[in-house]
Image 1 (spheres, rainbow, N blue to C red):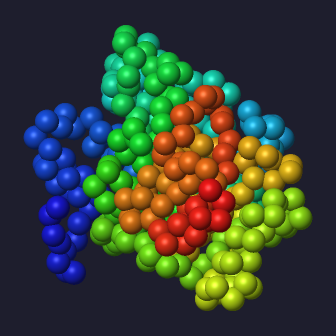
Image 2: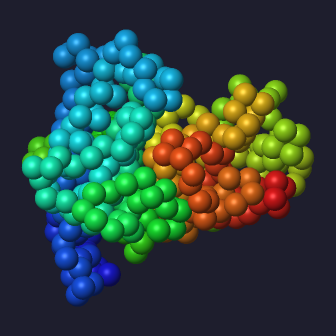
Length: 334
């Protein structure tokens, strides 16, 4: 790991190149994917900033494959990522939370050896009320033969991710990513249009301060889950109470807890017995980042990154965050 001083100005491109230099066998293709995602993030950030002025707030009047109402910015962000990534010759296929099927690379472009899975705009239902939203992405290496990517390439367990990251569009725009060698954060400097290294080697505290969970579902939780939440809130007298923080945008809640320590939980409930969040587009990439920062993630039974996906839009329960707090969940639920 190249060490940078407090006065160093390190762009994301420079950082990616330095990271690549640690691996003589690297072809530069993964680095190119990460850099192109950074460019797409800048374009989406610009749209998010100007949403209220450009008539791109609100519903688009359509539904995605999940049966959820699509926001105008969902569609715009999805198109930006597809167009930014389909022509570089590094990908053989993509999959989006907003698309029912795999997104193929056009025949006019070269096909690469990686697949990209992404949630173009997580938390988009909060756009109209100016709550931070984000983009989440996951990169896998192709495992099938032939030039085109297929479903089998997408349905790999999370521990096979070669890169994952998210972008949060808040008071500032920040990109956090990992390639399996720690988690690193970059803040967009709008004056020069560059992501600059601001949070190298992120480490999540082992014990967290924040609990992010939707308490509206408490009546639909199982008793073990209710007992766990009482433990986190300090109601059983066995630990210091965690502060409740929940805004309904997974990226925003996860980002706060990654930096400050805590747990993001979306337990199964009687309405969603298999869980609600998407394994491939949300839970796998954020769990990879969390583990690389010293945290942990599981679904109530199994480590998230060990779950074998069976469908492109598979849902799961998740408990992700500070290692010692997730260990409490393992003991009480597992």
